[in-house]
Amino acid sequence: MATVRLLMLQKALLHRTTSWSSSQLLLRSPSIPILTSLRAFSSAAALSPPSTAVVYDQHGPPDTVTRITELPPVEIKENDVCVKMLAAPINPSDINRIEGVYPVRPPVPAVGGYEGVGEVHSVGPGVKGFSAGDLVISSPPSSGTWQTYVVKEQSLWHRIDNGTPIEYAATVTVNPLTALRMVEDFVDLNSGDSIVQNGATSIVGQCVIQLARERGIHTVNIIRDRARSDEVKEKLKKLGADEVYTESQLEVKNLKSLLINLPEPALGFNCVGGNAASLVLKFLRQGGTMVTYGGMSKKPITVSTTSFIFRDLSLRGFWLQKWMTSEKAKECRSMIDYLLGLTREGKLIYDMELVPFNNFQTALEKALGKLGSQPKQVIKF
Ligand SMILES: NC(=O)c1ccc[n+]([C@@H]2O[C@H](COP(=O)([O-])OP(=O)(O)OC[C@H]3O[C@@H](n4cnc5c(N)ncnc54)[C@H](OP(=O)(O)O)[C@@H]3O)[C@@H](O)[C@H]2O)c1
Image (cartoon, rainbow, N blue to C red; front, side):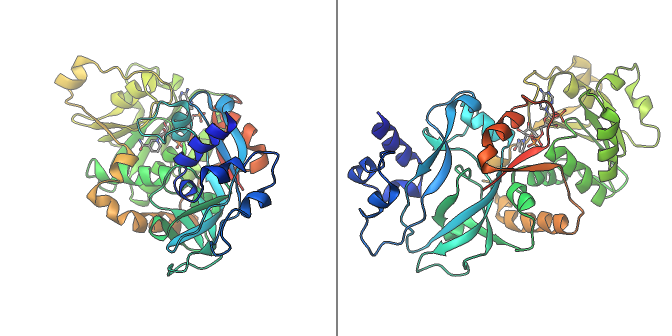
């Protein structure tokens, strides 16, 4: 049974599939040291080190179905770059992929994770432009970053400034890029305009605040009720938030009366659903647009008939993975360099907790919300 699982896992793991025959995989019995199986290769093949990975064999609750295991070395081909991973975040979509509810997900068994950063460990003989020690991110991101070594073709790696803090390099693609595209792509905003959003404590939310501020755009932010909400509000205001309200503070008759010095927002972002989405809609001006990009509360969005007829509101959606296939995504790497430049200048910062790989289970529990509101969990390998 274990052998069958390993065979399936190997099939699912891109490069880690091709260089193993079934007899070699049989050598991967836990009782047989890795060195024994290494001997099965011809002496000419360059190999990656073995990789310690977070693997799931079936979909289900991530804290139940994931396990940490060692994967065998793989061949580093002509144009391959072998990267020693340094850090990778646990994003809500990683959780959804493991649960089996994300629309695009790798076949199981699979290694978790989707974005991350590492340093070049070794390269194939045909590789140009990468040297050992270079800091790289997988670009476009792809499944399988929760492991210590990843081997991929050179065109799938993007070299970044070696002075970039690893936690920002690891997290730059999924959330900051989403924030950037949403601020720029839906409504033409000018300096002085405003945006309203819920889920403002999320990384996307924190990035929206700062990218908007960079453009002179104000933000009205909605957060969940919590103990010590004043501290959270203060933190978001330090990032540049104009207004921050808890949901319960917005249980008022005329919401817009709260917008004393701000124009009514033309654009709203929703990553929560339920009541928090209704609040975003209530803040929007006539003809405004709400972009939904997440559904953290798992509650549906309810929209009144009057919102359509008398207020002419538009409801849109954004999905980064789909956007990555668009024409615009050709400039994705320069957008990432722009965002990383802002982080190095201290103009784009967000809350994260770097967690050693051997504390993965606790990080996962935090990311699953089992220990209350927590900063983004970033695994440090
Ligand atoms: N569509 C896309 O392409 C795309 C791309 C990137 C991200 N996303 C989505 O964007 C959202 C934020 O992602 P992130 O990585 O930035 O988040 P994050 O930093 O991991 O933070 C999670 C956020 O979700 C909130 N939250 C958690 N459980 C909640 C619940 N039951 N009800 C209401 N709010 C809840 C948290 O609020 P507290 O602070 O109150 O705990 C926090 O603001 C997610 O839904 C994610 O899937 C979508």
